[in-house]
Image (cartoon, rainbow, N blue to C red; front, side, top):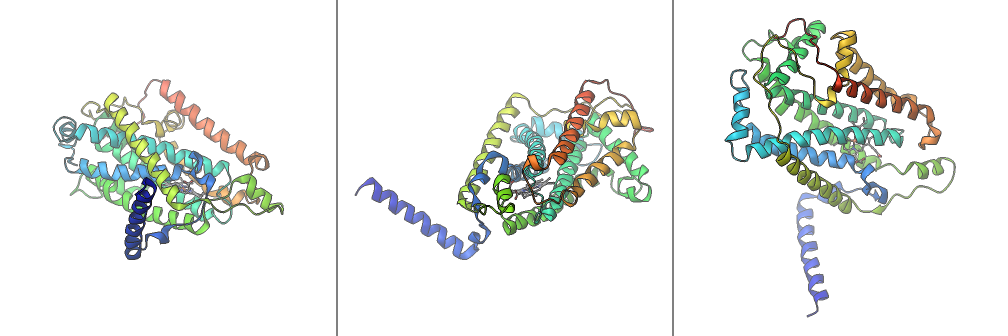
Length: 363
Ligand code: HEM
């Protein structure tokens, strides 16, 4: 028997196994036409983010076996994870690094969707759902920072409690008085492992259903040619299976890279928190807001994100022309670039500035 026939038979076995599984689970219903460009890095960033969330869920479940969410024991349980729990230091490091990579890929994915005008009709709702996902991602990073209950986490929470006060009746959830039976750290832990992941799963389902419904957007040049009466953009070129295998490939690459990062730079843990002291700076994704707090006070941490999210939510409703090429959307591209550069410059400024105290009363 030739090698070719054997491979053919082997392929037949795999196909039959797949058909048997698919007949029972209906997995092929998830498939949709995938254009060839959707396998390039720019159009697969959302998929990489999704794989990042899967890694975060798996490593998070492991960490939850050892973590205590009371102020008296939280930091010590992190020390336990780092030194005694099986694979604790590696799993914690991967969880930390993947969370950072996911934050970066979410921002890059949003940047790609913005740059290619992929939020335009009929994808406006998916842009808004994406903004919800951005909020959930930031919420997970914030609560995760607090959980380790070192000086940085403690100060992050103190800021949040004060922002809750600024919100008056609407900020009740952040007040220690809301549930005296459970310290606020316990409620933030619940938000980190139940509320935000549940919300994230619902939003992801809606996001993916809409990607399947609309398909991945055509390249801007193709889309604009179609608008101008030229040939219709190509719909196929690749397959869903190839697309998913590529996403998984990038996901595994992320796992390998974050494992190496963990071995070189393990996730840190700051000193035991000292109430009344304010000396740390926030993690990089919140750093741009730090100087604003210096200049305009704590309330800037409320109104600046509200303006930014509000502005992003308006994008598909203001930029309504059918064109998607950057050359035909110069004003929007310029505004987006200015906001991104301003945020990066603020973050850099904050990185090099000397930490200052802002809180009226540290907890
Ligand atoms: C936080 C987690 C997120 C995940 C896991 C995710 C996942 C995905 C995936 C897998 C796709 C298919 C194509 C691609 O990868 O580009 C996609 C498309 C899309 N996403 Fe996201 N996304 C997230 C956040 C966001 C955000 C923050 C926005 C914008 C505010 C957004 C807006 C969109 C839009 C409009 C599309 C359709 C793009 C097109 O057809 O070209 N997503 N997303």
